[in-house]
Length: 245
Image 1: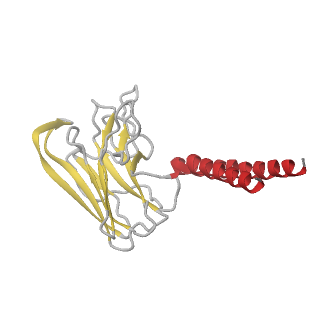
Image 2: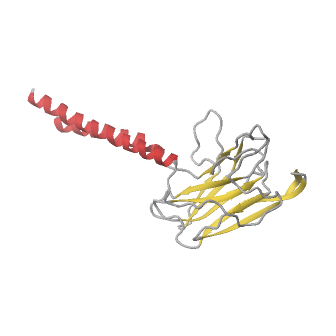
Image 3: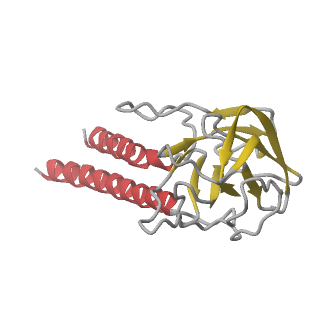
């Protein structure tokens, strides 16, 4: 009986650890460095984690929204990666900052020239983008992650309001309102919308740096371990008391 109680307590503790640690699984996401204000320019980071323990990420492809095209997209050079910016003709030319825009960036592709993103690591891919649209609160991107074992993961599922997060959610960039004084506020370089050069200075990033979501996941994981340990201890003590009785 004692052994069975301890085993049961251990099983409950293990389940608690798994349940609490679940948020540690990460997805491809996008966040601005500072603020991404409507009508302005911003530097955004696409964060790509390696979710496999037997393969490295060798290619990352980010597809841009066609309903809100961005004329200026400038990648930051990254050691160990080559980058290609693909543009497409717009079905209907746009007028941005007083100029007609007939093409926009449709895709940015990074290809590893070295080891890529190895198991247990993530990489940030910075882009300077603009001008950001003023008639939407968010931009939805579709990302495709390719591993060196030929596995392809498509992060393309939109989040439906009122529903659980999909298995492979698409990265979403939330846009803030422009400031009251008319300034758009941006951490990006305010280039002309027609400037589509492929090199721009941006804050350096490290594949081993952690952001707030990683910190939260670690804290939740520790809490899960503590809960599990408490469950095992309770089972042992309960077994001892019944044996003495």
